[in-house]
Image (cartoon, rainbow, N blue to C red; front, side, top):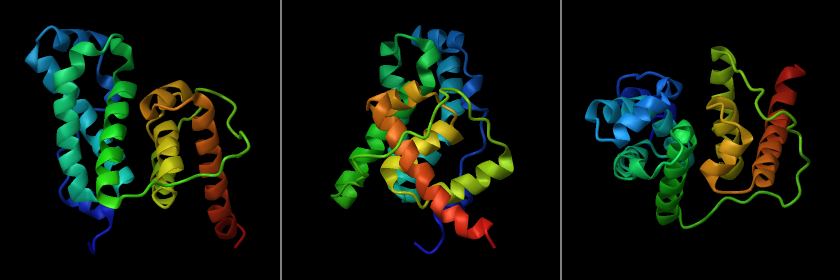
Length: 198
């Protein structure tokens, strides 16, 4: 594939939808009760963010499209099982993460690893607010992180999930999320330090 993942994504990207945060708990309940318009609004609101998340994990834009379809179908089928409508984002990202990892394992037959001991550099549970320019730079840097810590950093700082939501989405303990984020931040610092000292 000659084009970068980002170029491939924008070349074939679906139309931009409203942010995931625009989905209200009321819309989720309506969709659970059979309201097709509410379900469509939910799917449209999560589609782009979930695609980006899957594409990052898989590092393959075409495969990510297939997995996205699987994820959206799973959301349709299992939405009735979501007990707390306010947790829609974390729940959808959890489904997407699992689907992408399964597809990636089938395609690659190996997993990324991270060190066992990493200092906890994260302190506040809900502090990230990232402007557009910084988010673009961060996305570029995060794309080069190992998948295990890159996914945690993306969910935390780009999708702005809380540590508990990231842990739920990845189906790992909060401590593991913290260590993955800390490791990712440390790698980012190492990569940015030579650039900023010039």
